[in-house]
Image 1 (cartoon, helix red, strand yellow):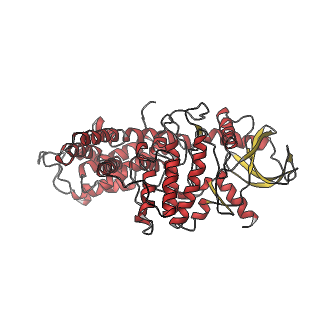
Image 2: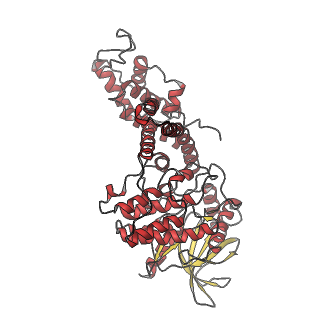
Image 3: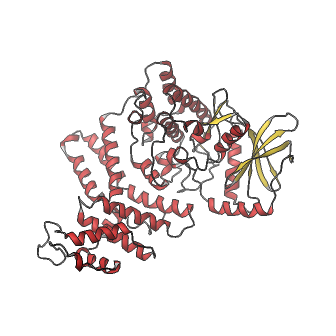
Amino acid sequence: MNQDSRDKSFVESIDPDGVADLDAVTIAPMSAPIERAAAENDSKLALPERGTVIDQYEIVGEVARGAMGVVFRAKHAALGRDVAIKMMLAGDDVSAEYRERFANEARAAAALDHPGIVPVFSVGQWHQRPYFAMALVDGESLAERLRDGPLTSAEAARIAKELTDAIGHAHEHQIIHRDLKPANILIDRTHSVRVTDFGVSKLIGGGSEVTQQGELIGTPHYMPPEQAGGSTQSIGPAADVYSIGAVLYAMVTGRPPFQAASPVDVVMQVISREPVPPSALNASVPADLEVITLKCLSKSVADRYASADELSEDLRRFIAGEPILAKPPGWIRQARMMLRTHVLFASVSGSAAMLLVLMTAAVLVALFRARNDVLELQDQLDRATLLLTTERRLTSKYISASTDRPNELAEFEINRLATSASGLQDSKPELSIQLALAAIDLAGQRGLAPPAEMIDLLRERLRAGFSGAASSDANSDTNPTTAAPSDSLPETTDELVQMAKQRWGTPLSETERQLYGIQYLAPEED
């Protein structure tokens, strides 16, 4: 591998911007203030040039830079060893929180001594910019390797085993990585795994946590549900076990377990949806390796491997051709998985109220006769009803923290309402119209253009006529049964909306508005 390729691989492990679905960018709060501080400081403080000596390191050249840091290739003046130096772009103006996160990355890696973890050699400061020197890995990132497609099951299991052993070592030293993903996993020229980027790591039950309650930290495609929920109190070693399973899933299928158009939708899938079995995407995946992968990806911490050591042992057994210890999920767990899937559909389609009622009824029927089983499923149902509140909270926090566009949150919700309205045209036409009107009203409140597809939906309904609910008065003026002549439809959008409201303008109740997600702009207070 040539020098440019090695440098590029290392940079991807530090700043993986633009690696698409296989590696979405790590979410960390305060990014906008940090970027502004970095830009301001970059203009005031010069960066080291080729030949500059920083302590015992001579700069060979800049490899690349991201929004918050710059990476240099350097050589130890006395030892002649090539190293990578990661330096903060911002100087004195950067927040204390980000300084602590930068120091945390160096501190965590320096505390670990394992062949599968990229070591940190030293830390320091140059012209008010903190930096640390670490090993320069001669190889490529797993993200780069996966661009060519999935790996063989044997290779994926070997990499997962080495990754698990390295993370098990970190857990023994009370450190949770919290951001395991292909871009943070390097494969050196001997094909060995090297884990890097402990920037959002935390101590198990310790006091070096540099994030605050409710912040969304990590990479959505690879973070566990308890981390995606914005809570840090319940995050333990099982979070890394989940992420290892997500990486293993990507290795055997060529894609992460969950994909969506936006990080918010990915987060909601992580919380609520079960992943497609790997064998459905790659028929060559062995059954035992699929069981191992899906056990890691269990929503419940209790259903995952209890430790990295347990996962490592099952991977060893698979590699050696021995029977694994994990078993496929039983029927009770399968029922819980089905329940989560249907409730997620409810949150997306707008039919939450109907489906929650159906699920409640299903819990009570004779299919689940055993009392303990019924209680367990009821508990799962109760938890599921909180998903919509969680979605509103996460949507508000993520979009607010990740964009400077004031209307992006409204645009997101308008799109969700429009999608729900389109999907319910045939099954629940009345609700479809109400959601279309809600989307149009929300657009008007925020000074945005009404969704064209919602205007077309109203025009189509007015032209075709609409009979309404069977229980309604057939002679009611608000429940027409005859089509409106094409030449009688208003020409302007405002008049069209007013006509639709006159015919079908019964507003949704407060409960319905919450269930259908129309109140993202007034999320719960934490």
